[in-house]
Length: 242
Image (cartoon, rainbow, N blue to C red; front, side, top):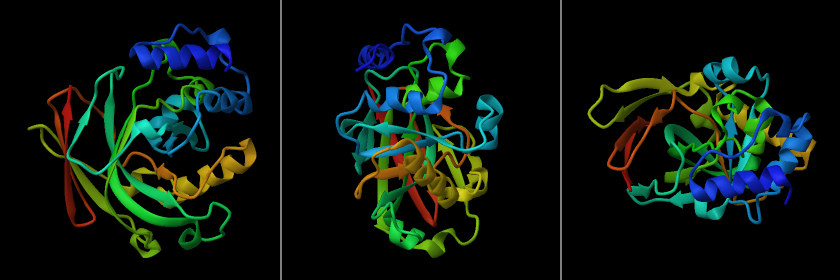
């Protein structure tokens, strides 16, 4: 593992910002993805970043970027999730897609299942590095946790038209969002991931999940918080523990 990857992994284990400066960040995306993958032994999922207009205003990116997640960073089902050890976690609702065959030419062949859930970013970059695209790639796109629920067989027709969602955080007023907040929609963002994987040698495998991008802006979360998502005629909820 290289020094940048080691510093990021150490910071994530400690739940704090990494000791990095701009000069440490690779100059190319390929090198940044190398730093990202150097932190991995097994990959259970991929999270997509930079898929929304508000993200692209920060990172100035023209396509998505992605980060791999360890199996221990992915939770299937349940109604609670521990935030212990995470650095300043956020949460955003997303559509999850499970890979069937990444080499297939249609979504029906590429994905076996779909689900709803929350992606919990927990970047360990210093504040001054967070707007840097290659720094985000090194940091596994701010990897934290991924919670997946309401799993069902993949249906391409579900994505034929934009859909709306609402997110409720504790007793705050509900926030509106939807698939139109993802540039190209969830399937468009996933298609960009597949293209990136081919270009940078990312090891996409059947059974891995893809978190396809935030359906509305992320909210800061802490132990004791509750989230409720209404989407696809379903309501799912998650509680955060310490």
